[in-house]
Image (tube, rainbow, N blue to C red; front, side, top):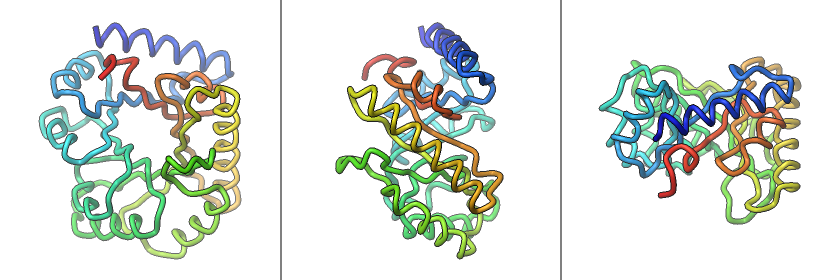
Length: 228
């Protein structure tokens, strides 16, 4: 069942990419495996899935050590800074950095794990300005980038932005995604960051709009694994 759903979603991503004048290879499918058992992850890996998203270190620890080390793991939830030390060596990406405290904690953790690969970091932006969501306000983004670049944060690579759409509001979600794309382009150009080229946006209910607006990563859980 999981392999069939993955096949369908990959086909839809390819079709949406083509409609947008893009290549399907430009879009990374992240299977959101939070709360799912190891067996579901293993089934997805057998079906060719290489990227998985988790939102707690504790849940992820029941899966990461037991699968092929070539699999890429993405931390997509709000990370408590006290858990930063558990990220190096376990996760390849973190999508939810929104404070200097967290950035510094992660850099310290990377210094304490010199054998760990560089951690690819995305900055979470609350484009819709919803009080219930984490992330920087759009007017905080440039000052935050300038703070990041003024410090030597070992082991962290700044790769782009992450945002979330607005539940049950298609038109506002489209505006959110378009604005996030504009911000990513502005930051990459203004601060001369050629590697700042990633946009993580779009989930099971709105990934089509995200792809149309330039997403390079879509985070899909329910459409792959079913309802929790």
